[in-house]
Image 1 (cartoon, rainbow, N blue to C red):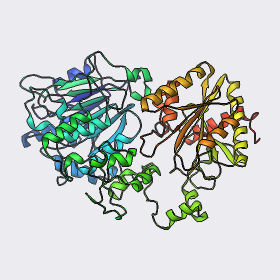
Image 2 (cartoon, one colour; image 1 turned 60 degrees about the vertical axis):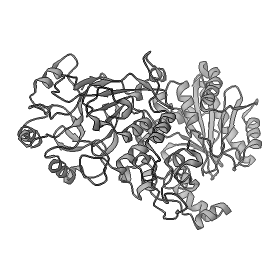
Image 3 (spheres, rainbow, N blue to C red; image 1 turned 180 degrees about the horizontal axis):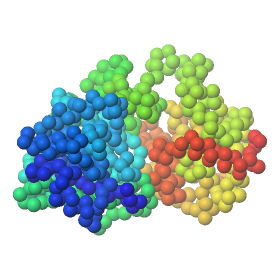
Image 4 (spheres, rainbow, N blue to C red; image 1 turned 90 degrees about the vertical axis):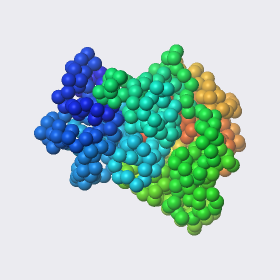
Amino acid sequence: MTNLPSTLFVYNTFVKTPNYVPFGPTRSYQYVNKSAAGPFDALLCVGQFFPDLADQLDEFNDYIEGRAQIPLPTYFIGDYGVSAAKVLLAATRDAGNQGFKLDGLKICDNLYWLKGSGKFTLHGLSVAYLSGQQYSDSQQFGTYNQDDVDVLRAIAEEPGIIDFGITNRANTSDVPPVAYEPFGSDNIVAELVAEIKPRYHIAGTKGVFFAREPYSNVEAVHVTRFLGLAPVGNKDKQKFIHALSPTPASTMSAVEIRTKSTTTTLSPYTYEEKTAHSMEAGKRSSDSISDSQYWRYDVSQKRQKHGDGNRLCFKFVSSGSCPRGESCNFQHDVDAREQSLRGVCFEFMNKGKCERGPDCKFKHSLQDEGESNSQQRRGSGNANSNRSTECWFCLSSPKVESHLIISIGEHYYCALAKGPLVEDHVLLIPIGHSPNTVSLPSECEIELDKFQNALKKYYNKQGKEVVFFEWASRRTTHANLQAVPVPSAKAADVKNIFNLAAERQGFKFTTMKSSNNYDGRTLLGEQFDRNFSFFYAQLPDGTILSHSIEENEKFLPQFGRQVMAGLLKKADRDDWKNCTDSKEEETKMVEDFKSGFGEFDPNK
């Protein structure tokens, strides 16, 4: 493997020529792999992978059964054709393929089946895939089903940019007028691609080669490029192979990600176009496949209110709002939204189970809706006790990661942020449960002021200023105030970039000015209490920017971090889940921080 960006070798279907297997002794593969574009790090097959005819099996089986060697890692999604069921069924039963394997089930050396749907990293590139040629809940191989669609819906809600989206079918928005395979379009694929927003969408089974002009994405800064490949050996000699060498989005700067060419077009997935298409197609059934973006919430068996019974609006549950409003056919259930905010796994809420098992980062249990909720509303000590055992920030919780702790006071403690934006990114966390830091008693505020002043001195010694910010929701149980250092030369830009980000999100900050932390936070405490959801940032010059978040407002929980990531040119680290470190690395960062912070630590 080279140290350069990974070079991917993308093929369409291989069944149209005698030597259809791309990794075999075919002249086309040998030529391309040895050309200036090669050698390649991996091969992706987006068309039909298995033969059409039984008499083509001999060469194919030579590779499957180990008599011939596949020269590079090869991944396929076209899981249909002659012998597909036999080979794939054996793969699913293989002991080495048990568990949740998003990066492919091994068929033989260097050959991997991307089963169903998922996302994995290939040489630094994020790849999302949908396997199969059509929607079906009855066929085991060669098709995708509702669960596969739901997995991609959940992936679309995860942070970060997808580099590659590979699908067997193309979508109606990417069909050139001369396409001669009418069954190759798929509206579900269109809806999924619109939500996932990959930088490259590559598909087969359209019958022609088609490279669409890049288009802008809705609610995203990057563009998408679509590539459709013709069949191997097609009579018109259209292109069936393509080489790519992209830079992973996770390593690109914010400027690079935003760059658009002069030929960039508008997104084909506007809400108006979808609405027009729906009207033209007729009234949508509540059971229609086109509504597959909505999750089934059938775990608690408690909701049979109206409409589709146990189906909830996916948009509302994930974001707190839905563009369809009252005309939506699915439930806008506040309780389900709360479960989502508490970190409950979407797949668990959808199916009652999650195939990721222990590898899933989200919770696989629902908050009891009976006694424990009423206890929480009454402020029961038992409820708080139960809650603290599940909380990542409670010092008494088995889930607290104590190796991240830097200093502990009477009311607050300081800890390294999980997946820090920069190495000196820390959190100031109340020891007791509170949804925010501004509604705590005065003795807590006095100690917090000492911590903030100590951090200011520590950062100043390094030639840096500090920005404090907090997102507080009525539904969160344990507040944390984030402290991110910025080079002194960039301190003057902080206010402008926060205001610009707010404008893009459709709101304006309320601005206050204070000569010290304590007085400024006292003003915040007069504005907000534990019954409010809000965001605020304390800037180096004493300015405080605050915003009250309305009940149905779509506010990004990581808004503050994303703004700071843009300022510091750390776009690839705008979500902590994308940049977690090993325990050993975290421990070293904590020790390094302590060695410099010790002289300022108010609790030393």
